[in-house]
Image 1 (spheres, rainbow, N blue to C red):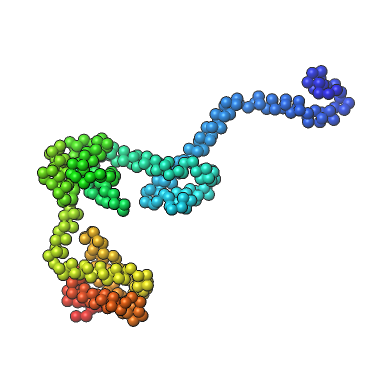
Image 2: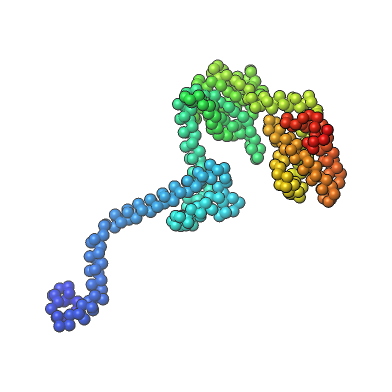
Length: 371
């Protein structure tokens, strides 16, 4: 009978129908017909491609949003996104941690299409600009503002201008928002003024609404003839210049130290003693062990630039005086550093009592309680 019985003439050989049906089911003509019927119930190919593309696009958008949230988290915590070895960077490791809950992330990390340096840096820049736009919007709503600027140098020696805007909201709450760090190609007052004005233009802030400017006391910034403050005041006489209070305090304390050699000597001695104990793991471990046994806090390093926080370092030496004294005696007995070093530091520790006093202690008593 052949396949014509099922396609042209019709089937009428019912005596052996089951065997014929089984044979027909395995034929190519039957398979082609089944395929055509199934295709009739499917959407057109163009539609299928479009739906697949939409699903893929939605999936990749979801993965990208997870990556952006991870970058925002690391930036907020002040953590580096990449390390010396790419696969061990914080961003990759954080995404691998999240993939335990989102299986699709494994293929996203493996492909690495959106994990290149350029794309990650671009995402960081977009996040930064978004934050700045929100800050500028709030500053504009408060109308009047002041600017605070200071020159800084990063580890590579690049000169930068730290630009901050100070404003007050309707609840009389003061806000100080750091807008960013801007590279300086020159340290002349004219160039710094041009950079400040360029920042204000980019932020859409009118210089006429500026009511104050705060800089350090350097002639480049505060000069009354051609300094930055004078140049800005020519554009807006209402932009009142204020010498930075923190810098003024620093200069005052610096002058006091120059006029009182005993104070400078006490600070130098404190710095020598603490550095001697801190710069050696063996000595530091011995001091930590004694501090733990006596329930004392540890020594604090002397800040080289911020004078107003040096009191905590001096107080830590006074509180731990007996521990440091005991540690030095043990170090001198056991050996280690040259004996002359230990003797000198031990002598400085005794000498420091003549100048360093805690406000809570009587001037006539030493930390050990002896008269």
